[in-house]
Amino acid sequence: MRKQVLSVAVFVALAAAPPALADFPYAHQGTDPSDYTDLYLENEEPDDVGEEATLDDNGGGEYWKYSASPEPTPQNALNDVRPAELGGVRGASLFDFNEGLDWAWQVSTGRPDVTIAVLDSGIEWDNAGAMTDLRFKTRINRGEAPVPLTNRTDAEALVGGTDCDAYADVYDANDDGVFNLRDYACDLRVNVTDPRRVGPVGTLIPQDVLIAFSDGVDDDDNGFVDDMVGWDFLDDDNDPFDDVGYGHGTGEAEGSNGEAGNGNTIGSCPNCTVIHMRVGDSFIADVNRFAAAVVYAVDNGALVIQSALGTLNNTSLAR
Image 1 (cartoon, one colour):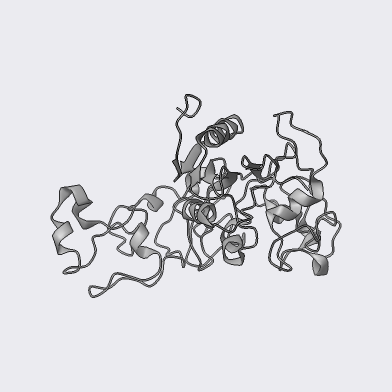
Image 2 (cartoon, rainbow, N blue to C red):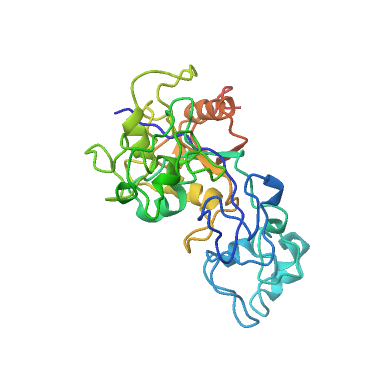
């Protein structure tokens, strides 16, 4: 099987009590998920950011990374008075339990037509926690993947709680405004028992779609055969699986794209989708593989290139 992973950028709005559409798309109550201007946070708190901060602590979980407020004094008193430290603000001003502050998620939590390409050590399909955050956020290339079928019963569905009777034989099979892995939950061609898969037992992951539909044909004529979920520029195949378990690329993808509302790691753009690009087996990579992945990402619709890499060489191609 050739490797491959193409992530689609999709944004999700956040809510304290998730709407019936499930975690992705994830939006405030009463939102229209097809209206990207409606994908923002109002007074809801995503349950991924930890416990609410008090005057005596820093807040738990992920809150310190996203907060718009300074760390409570006296813990951060030195930085609170330094303009270069943004007055002591700890995070990216994305979210805060203080609703009187301005934070980015009040404006937008992202949108489904924005793709983030993560250029790193690949994706750990076998990491159950990461798949909780990323399996529905990975963009599937409809130029290589076929229209989902709806020939499973509800009892046979590959995602719990799926109503296969409500699915249709179109790309957005469940009519939730996004084409992603969930649309293949009722397709008998896809299974979670193939011996070539590495994912958690019984859990549908993007690699299962890759295995099911890799046929050796470059259906979208972009020069990369069966690139349904990205590309491995280290091994030059269509599965960007992090087969050495380094994990850096997985962490970068979660930091950018982690799903909101599941109590796990939340990404800074929780409604974006992701393309996984394996350019090395650590965060030290050959710069020409990095450059080739940048070209691929731009040519295939990525709007953001994320990379936290070092290299031992420098080339005109990379520049």
